[in-house]
Length: 369
Image 1 (cartoon, one colour):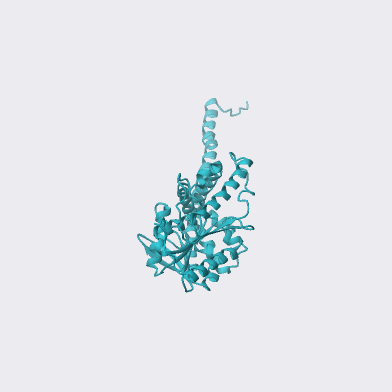
Image 2 (image 1 turned 90 degrees about the vertical axis):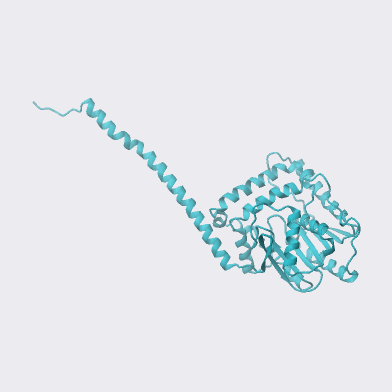
């Protein structure tokens, strides 16, 4: 009689007991592998960004001088000689390199200085974003500690326009005049409230950039390279130095913090303070700032049309801040007038210098204090 071994129920149960852990272990191994890979990518990205930033610091040292201003150091780049001294103040996200294509031309006429606000370029970062008053005070201290003497012809783009007007109000005896390049207005966020969803989207993008910058993703993907206009007549070395500063780990965080602070600065109930008879030039963009705006939930086409009208009104109002003002709409320029039509900005600076040299220092009128 031939017998065959037939597994008993107990044996079957034993086999199943042996197999089940193997079946459960596969997803566990996958999960563990995924976690390990994620940790490796994060660690690798962090190391990559840290090492690349260190190399950037070696390859692209500050072109100017780093000067102590209170508890931090700011970068100041000055060229040329003569009076008045032109001081260039950048907009949100900008720094001294924004003016690298203009500064050499201006330096053939007079002394000209560009600088980096806290957290940008070659300047130290700070724990909290600066108010416009604190920024103006920082700039004044920087110029004094850097050995620069007034009077100063202040040129401010966008948010920088608000900062230079604050400087002029706080230090009127040191100021020869102000040139605003499509400047921010203290009430623009309030009067352009229909664009709040656009601001929210931009803030969300900056928040995301701040996070991924720690892993070097903007650097790896070259996201910031396009922020340097290809049309500007600058050398390859200057362009590389500019990009290196945009790829700093702290760059997106600084822009985000300044964006939040700027919202508060441009949501005031009161209009901008008058500048008395201080020589003032307002250069406004002639192109519709929202003509190519991508659709955003909560912002209708009619909102954009209304916003364009209000934006033009705000620029015209800035020209009314002084009894000695000039207002120009630069037809072919967008918001970055000094990039799109640099000759217009240089021309306005030359005109202001010639006027000051011809007329001499003006006496501050009541209301400038």
